[in-house]
Length: 353
Image 1 (cartoon, helix red, strand yellow):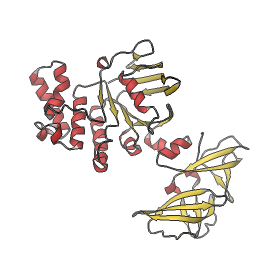
Image 2 (image 1 turned 30 degrees about the horizontal axis):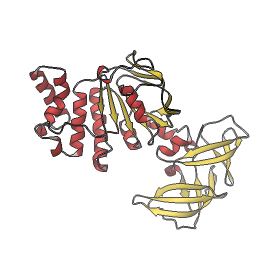
Image 3 (image 1 turned 45 degrees about the vertical axis):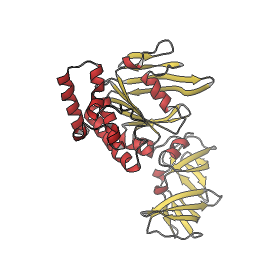
Image 4 (image 1 turned 30 degrees about the vertical axis):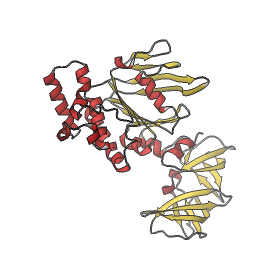
């Protein structure tokens, strides 16, 4: 295992910077997810790490060893990395056991050693009974397990995964998130995992790097990214949030509706405007005034949707601001009803951009 370090990594195509001055340190044994929408630069970053493309600027180091720079890029086969693609890329004419053994045979290992290691790996991924089957005879989840086994069995320094679960149906995708994490906990390879699915990132990652327009917008643990988004982009992309904009009353309050809204951290910007995020499920909905409680605003229900275990409300506040609120299913309030919203200060987070 080895750490991976990106220093000012940039990749341009013409005048467009697809990856723009990205710096990132991934400790050995960690699993980091590069998370973001299509076109944000996450897959290009992964391909730069793999050595498939050369950087326009910056460097990539693994274990302190320089692998990529504008002057020299070590080819992929010399990087001690394994990569798992979206398409699985299994050999259709080889059995499960033969696919898993492929990398070991390229390394010209002895047959007895290969058999023992393949048997152990197939046991780890719980497919030992399917060793003689061909990829076309397997489910999508089974094929993905074989792809993981083939990558892990060669004991790479770094494991790279490019949208590995996107071809699976919803139930299999959920199951395989936990499988990826289980295998990582067992082998502890330094892992870079690219996905646009926030649930995948939250389930599998030690750290999440949220990318936007070629840059890392925020880096943190799943809890930090979800509970403390630093920008409007992160707040909307991870879990979705209400964004409230208002003029600063002081360093910890903004004017909102007919009230002052207090937020969780102070910001020394009196006189300006601040944006604050709050999750839909953190807002408390009431049909009667809430006495003696701060951060309460009045509004009108303009939409209500029953979702089984919850109800999704859209509430209009004075001034035209719309807030989404997720409430318990038994809290059935009709449209046009007057309601009061409590926005707990510790759930209101100021944003930097």
